[in-house]
Length: 342
Image 1 (tube, rainbow, N blue to C red):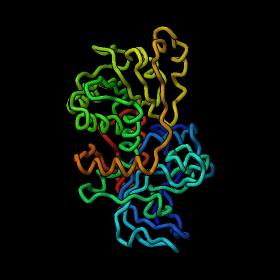
Image 2: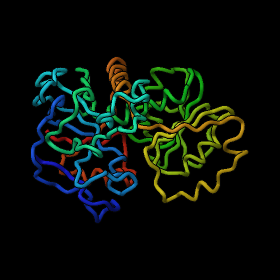
Image 3: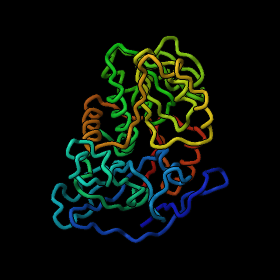
Image 4: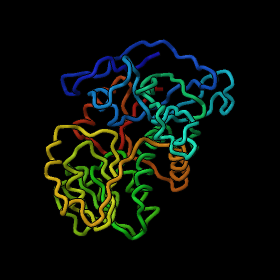
């Protein structure tokens, strides 16, 4: 099968091709697993974190990609939850132990044996992949393949972030960064919290214009002050500066939810500007988001189908995966990027 591999770790740039095209052996589903013929796979900043070594895979080479949509090609022994031809999706959560205290409480995202798709197991930048059937998701018929792919991570992690923000209708929400996840959060908030104004902080004029186009009450640069204090802010960036700036925009008792699996070190000195009275005092809170659970993905898919909530998507061929990652790093973003595999 065709696949794009991470063979080595290193910086992503115009002169580098972080992923290598390869003819890879077709996988075979083990007991309880299904084999998926991949249709599309979303492109996520997490792939940059893997390639550049902030979150290195435990072994190389590995096939990245964790926003997978495809159809069941074959069933392993004992796999009976799906039938051949069913359309399914795979998210960042590839598996968990299902027995520890975290898993029993529905917090499988915190399981010590959590395995990530495209990092700990081969993912969807390929024509075929396997996954335990319990961690595959039925895709609603109202969503096209390319529309469904970003919902598996950008959408689901945004949904979890919004829940952790504990927002009430009418309260003011801030979003730092305006890529795949943030633009879906804005669409979701406009449906679920119609009285809530959304304030967007983004580095590029194009992102700010896109936010206003989707209904943001205000859009400014990262260092600007919003017209009012914000009750909650969701940070979707890979940087530290927006975290510090967001805290200064928070209302007393407000909550900052950091929706990022890793932060880059390029602006780590921004943390030196953290000032307790200005940024943290008066019961402000900081909450990180760790992965997603299966229930996050399934609940969000159901909600997205009902609204309906559909992302803005730009498609690339599988062989163009490097170009998609380079553009993502450069901030050339409008909605979500998706690889067309089949």
